[in-house]
Image 1: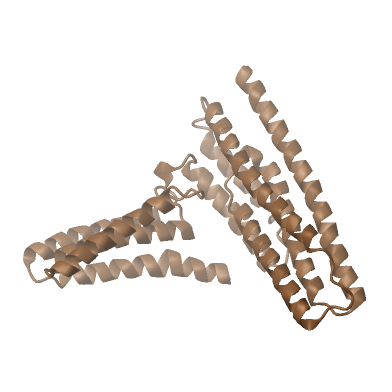
Image 2: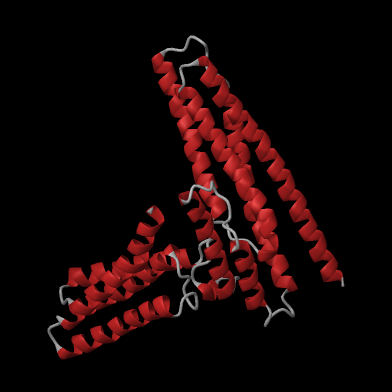
Length: 318
């Protein structure tokens, strides 16, 4: 439900609201010249909306990130319309600043680590569409009570779409795939370092004294909650990490590792809230068990990526 609200707000309400506001500002200008210039800029905004909604993933990724990118582009033209519309010097200066800031926001999202503006991305439109679908299926699995499992058939559909999109440009793509894999591994090493930092924090947290006071329990609970929040943020980062389609199996292991970190941190936080010694022991053991599972998934991840690198090297030599 939360994802649906985000989709409606960022992909429908915000871009279309800016469009209608820009049109109304354009037609309310005082002179014919200002009206015509405003209408022309409004037409550009409407054209961007049409490309976004009707030619999905052809220019801007059709997701919430794409909706934000479209909104900032529309606000850039909206600020230009405001500069033309108003004669007051302060209003003109304000609109120039607004246009500059909106252009900066557009550039920031366009070069974000999640591919959004397709001309600046290393990924094709088909790959972005396929990976978006896989990400949405993963989020939907939580809403269906499946605990983060990829829905049946989704992985097959993703692979089919990627194969379909790559067949035309198969030749000469090995170097590009290798570059993507290297970039992905750099990002993966970053999130794994964050995982290890969280695990170190949990190790340093230790156990609660048997005769802990309420004030000290509250302090330790706040510390555990901070660790839990970091683990949740890390899990979202891993879910949104774009990866080459050849590394899909390896990325699943990385996702599972981040899930284990999240569950371990939550169990630690639950441990600090329990007053019953037996329940405390259960929660603490669950936390340590999840850390052990994380290490297993990370080992599988590194084995899978080493195999990918070895295969790529052999293909390059051939």
